[in-house]
Amino acid sequence: MKSGYKVRPQADQDIEEQAYYFAIEASPDLGHQFLLSVHETFQLLATQREMGWTARWKTPGLASLRVFRVTGFEKMLILYLPLPDGVEILRVIHASRNVQALLGREGNR
Image (tube, rainbow, N blue to C red; front, side, top):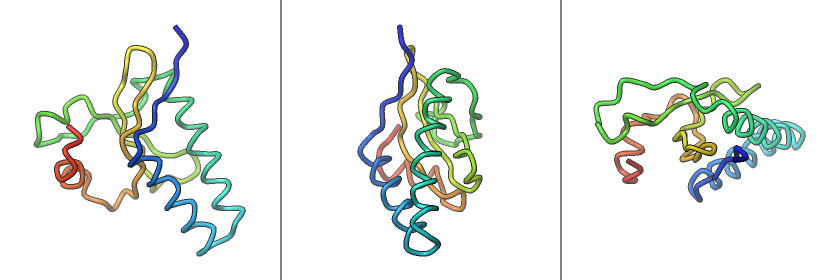
């Protein structure tokens, strides 16, 4: 079966907002590069699902959640779940965010 990735709507919104931020605050080229890097990193994760790391989550429902950095944007984190045929992308957020609180509020367990 071909490996692929599924992007949840909230992750899609995260990507759009961050690309817009980079385009406005830095340059349109940086916003575009971010979009390319995000999807290239998703493709990599889809073929190597265990590549990311797990954190010591206090919430048991987050045990299978993995984290990986966006290539070239090291402070941007991809939160994903490994699937038998790829990965499901839950969020793409800045590393300064409180991941556990964010996901706990949204019910992404």
